[in-house]
Every structure is written in structure tokens, then in C-alpha cells.
Image 1: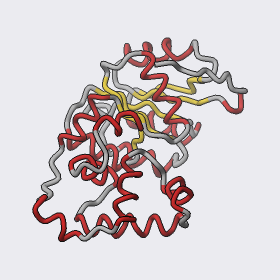
Image 2: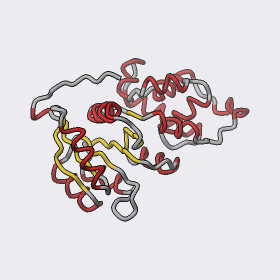
Image 3: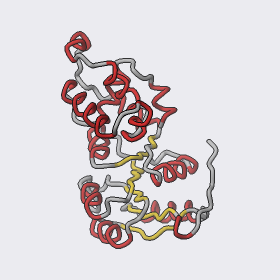
Image 4: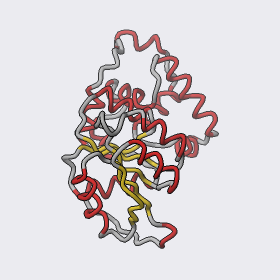
Length: 231
């Protein structure tokens, strides 16, 4: 994977907050990222209180976070961050492989998710993606998402009566397109796209775009390879 280094001005630099209970992880990430002139490490947090204080004070561009530590952080910290620093984009780097937790993290607003097995290039690429509010999921996380069972009865798919427009919106959502991008592509208003999504979720009895992506893959609207390439 080739990484494009932009060398941004100081005001444009990607301001990063590192939140991890393990000292060695925090130092390792700082050393790994400090050589990139686009990045500015604005702080480190070892527990929830420090995370929320620094997030509120500095409003970082990207928060690198591992919630998988009951004594220092909890998954619900993600929800708190969204409230006090709504413009910060969340990148989780964690060893947690719980399907339920990964789905919950995504529902709390995490747009990029890596495991601690990922290499330097993946981490840097994920930071650039998160800074632009784009999704970046490593292949292990993709596998976990795809393996989640939605309990959709394929024999009753016709009962959902999805229109061709709704099917197209599901497919584009699974490719990682935002509502605004989908609207421009289909010559619709963003409001109309959101209305279609709401109707789709009601028909499929799902509650999130993540479940919509799983539906798209399980029902052949997009392949696993297409999803991986798009994200």
C-alpha cells in the first residue's frame, strides 16, 4: 500500500489524541507517528477522565482509542466523546474481537477500526482516512462484520419489496459512499437519500448502516472483495 504524504501547513495538520491504557502502546504510537510532518500529537490519555478532558480542551482531528480496558476506559466513552468533541473522528486500534463490541463502537460513531496486528502503513492510512471522515477497516474487522448474522430469511426477501432505487442506495452505502455523495450521483437531494435509508431500515427491520452493509453482502448486492476495495 502506498501512502501519499501531503505535508500540510500547521493549521491544516492532523491533530491526534492517543488514548490507550498501556504506556508502551502510547509511546509506540507517538514514536511511530511523530516522524510524519502532517501529524501533531496533541496529548495522551491513560483513562476516561483524561480522554474526555483532553478531547474537550483540544478538539483533536483524530482520536486513536482502545476502549478494551475496564479499569481505564469503557466503550461508552465513545458516546461521551461525540457529545463534547463532535468534530473529532474516531479511530479504534484494539485487540478486542467481540462482534457485539465492534458493532456498538460503530454505532457510537467509530469510522475506522484496526486490530493491534496492523502494520505502520495501515495505521497511517487509517489516520488519513479518519481525518477526512472516511471509513477504514482492516480485513480482520471486515471479516467479523460480515460474519455477524442478521437472521434475514432469504425466502421472505420478496416481502420486503425493496424498490430498485432502495437497492441501489443499499449498494452504494455498502461501498462507503456518504449520503451527500449518493445524492449527487443519483441526482437526488440529501434529504431524499436519508428518507430512502429510513424506509429501507424499516423494511429490513434493521437499525444501522452497518447492518445495511451486512445485508448487501449477504444478499449479493456487493461482494466482500468490492467492500474491501471500497474501504
